[in-house]
Amino acid sequence: MSQIFAYIDHHGGQAADSALELLTAAKKIDSSAQVTAVVCGSGSELDQVCTQMAKHYAQVWKVDKADLSYPNAELLRGYLANVLPAEGILLAAHGTLSMDLLPGLSVKLDSAYVADVVDFEGLEGSTLKTIRQEFGGQAHAHVHCDVGQGAVITVRPGVFPPDESASASGEVVDKSAEAGEVQAKRKYLEVVAAEMGDVDITKEDILVSIGRGIGDEENIDEAKELAEVMGGVVSCSRPVVDAKWMEKSRQVGTSGQTVKPKVYLAMGISGSFQHMGGVKGNPFIVAVNNNPKAPIFQVADVGVVADMLEFMPELKEKVEELK
Amino acid sequence: MNILVCVKRVPDTAENEIEINSAGNDIERDDLVYSVNEWDNYAVEEAIQLRDKLGGSVTVATVGDEDSEEVLRREMAMGADNGILLTDDAFNGSDGKGIARILKGLVAKENFDLILTGAQADEGSAQVGGMLAAMLDYPYASLVNAIEVIDDSKLKVGREIEGGNQEMNEIELPCVLSIQTGINEPRYVGIRGIRKVASVEIPEYSASDLGLSEGDVGESAAKVKRVDYFVSEMGEGAEILEGDTEEVAAKLAEMLKAKGGIK
Image 1 (tube, one colour):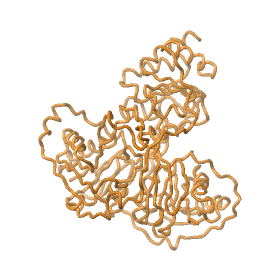
Image 2 (cartoon, rainbow over the protein chains, first blue to last red; image 1 turned 135 degrees about the vertical axis):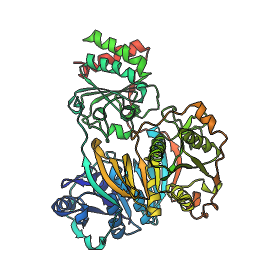
Image 3 (cartoon, each protein chain N blue to C red; image 1 turned 120 degrees about the vertical axis):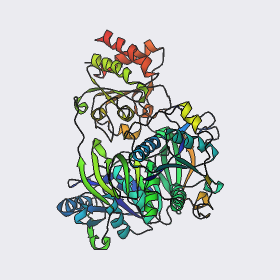
Image 4 (cartoon, rainbow over the protein chains, first blue to last red; image 1 turned 45 degrees about the horizontal axis):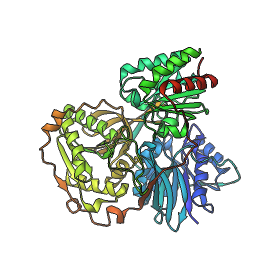
């Protein structure tokens, strides 16, 4: 029987959506595993999350530290290394906190590290069989991990269904004393909120979203014209913002805006999980991409394999005819 | 400030259709276009800008075979002062920790105030920078999208977190930072720039040069192993519209209208 821990990310007294996905992931590794939620933070918000988690996890480990009112990864890593047994398996959601915290924690615990797992194919002896994606989602890989000396594993948010059975009446164990004292050479200062732009893409029903395939800044006008005849607005993926061709507020994705349109027309967008993580509400997704292997075609309802620059004017004409 | 930037040669996913080979155990590599990992370009640009402001040097290093020399030269053409190739058959099959140990060996030999990596590379693990920092006992910040020098001993760095928000931190030097795309605009490298560095000697360090033994690196030390690549049946997949451009556009316009995509 494996000892599996789930690191619970939380904000404002609420556990992240991934909290119950980790329970499903743990059971997929080993259905007989004893799964312990690990919740770090401070004060009443922390207690709130621990109480929530005790409904789902048989055991909840609480680490209450005044300096964890914001999750500074450099402090968290030290506390977790003091608390977690080296031979256990720690699960967490793949995200901006885990990327900061966990590769280093796997070094401190001297355990294996596998990031962004999309599925588990079981545990054989000490070999955990996992599935990952590489090359921006264009290829899948079987990756085997020796968990004999423990492992730190992150799973992709949204791929394991949340276990909402709430059948546990778990106990909360206070591990704060064991976590000891930790010094960090990095000090958290503040979070600067994203600037709002001229258009709020989160409120639009129709989004014409453009990616790397737009090729050049001057082609954006054509996308705007198409969006206009459709009655929507233009949003974009990360490379368009990196090139400074559109404002950050137009970017769809986990590091940008979360949108809930009715129709999402993705053109020249490969469809990385970071991008698709920002598309919610089950819209009708159309993908136009010249690479038939682009992962966007796996999640789209309808696909067109074409160069978006050639296809856009044609589509605009046909839409105008239908209006 | 002496800065090390760790870079990697990767298949360019923006330029390639990645296919599985006929044996089904690897991607088809014959016609692949390789380039420097996109994130690494931003890291090198950031390092060059810091050096130009503060003095010092920029060293680019990579773990790989002779083919990886081209990415070092490319980054030197951008303006990096030195390139170092970390190469040894014993490195083959290293997992993330193995790569971090190789880089740690380099850091132990030379003197760096700041170490930069790209936030992630072709495998999408975003792991080597954080591992290297932990092995060196240096502070670490990932997904960095802004760097401001406070003084000789510390930096102010912004991290890109969820929702487009930015987490500001003060971090002590020496430290390791993983750099997010968009932090700057990497300069263009022309053929002339590449030619200028074409004959610069690039030192090579082997496992023994770096004080590494078999138990540290390579396949035997790896706890994480990729067994093969495969084609996934994930998701139902899109209905692909067939026909000439005009037909497809007409079909799609009808569908969009039916789904409320035309107002």
